[in-house]
Image 1 (cartoon, rainbow, N blue to C red):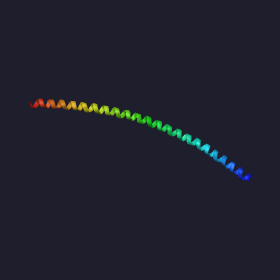
Image 2 (image 1 turned 180 degrees about the vertical axis):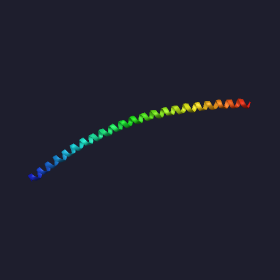
Image 3 (image 1 turned 120 degrees about the vertical axis):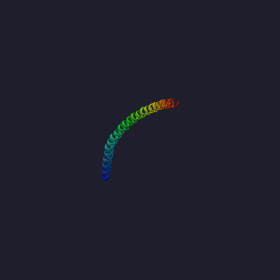
Image 4 (image 1 turned 90 degrees about the vertical axis):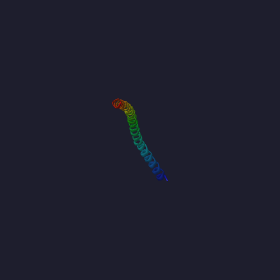
Amino acid sequence: MNKMLIAAAASSVLLLAGCASSEDATTAKLDELSNQVSQLSQDVQGLQSDVQQSNSAAMAAQEEAARANERIDNIAQSYTK
């Protein structure tokens, strides 16, 4: 009976020790993943800013093209009159 109690106590101590070391590894992994998520969030914010700038540039180019087409139409109409 005493041997069985000692064996159970020893195995529970080893089990708890194993869980404690596993917890440190899990915490390290969690910290690493948190850092990766933070980095990806920053990357996404930067890309969103780039997309907004690209949209603004595209709209400006489209407006300039429309003005140029109007000028070309006006020149073409003056030659036909």
